Image 1 (tube, rainbow, N blue to C red):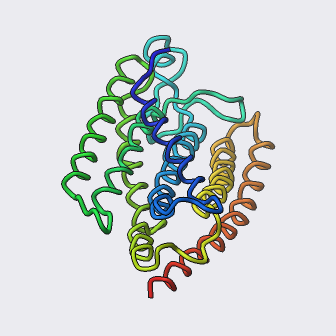
Image 2 (cartoon, rainbow, N blue to C red):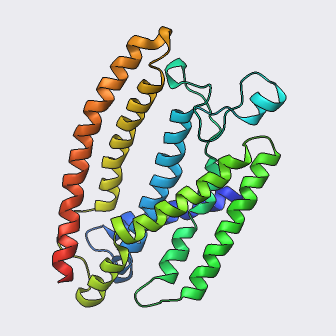
Image 3 (tube, rainbow, N blue to C red):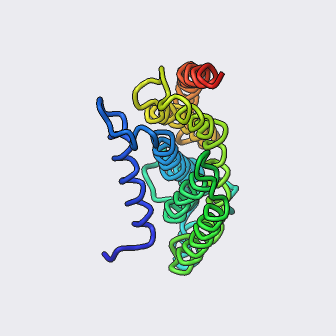
Length: 265
């Protein structure tokens, strides 16, 4: 198999992940320590947008791919906002919505945010150019995936908008990268933060997303007479786990947020 456009995004994510974990080693270089917030932002965005969002929605919505709808006619068509014919309780499947290849291209938007809004660099024009190039490439990927019958065009267009929103929210509201940068400028590093806290936050989020998926899949299967008991069990179990992991995630994150506020003052 030849090297494709999405492979560049995968390589970018792997390199940033390795650098991120290297920055948390006992004696990292000063440069790695300085870029911990940015590397943590890329790692978190990669996990959330290319794994949590893509696979969470694929297995929850269950939209059939064009080859099984338009050409073979095996399965009914469903819009991107509707529940498709696939059900995870009937077995694993390779759903259509959203497009994982397009989501992988969109990860380069993290580089645009880092360059455009960095406290020292502040290269807004360069960051904007990288952002527009990323979105343009993502549109081309969405079109290409629809032309080869792997996805509907809405599978790619929807994930472009959704992942852009998530990356923006992670940068400014959740990870608060600009605030971390200001702390590092004045103190040299962020103090009192748990080791690899961004990755640990993602692990909390993984369990929370899995619990929410259990609730969604159990609820959508409620009307099926053949899966009524598994649906009820999945719905109840997912609800309990959602409450449990939401509380654990919030407790972990609130400590991080409070530490950033304290260091900023």
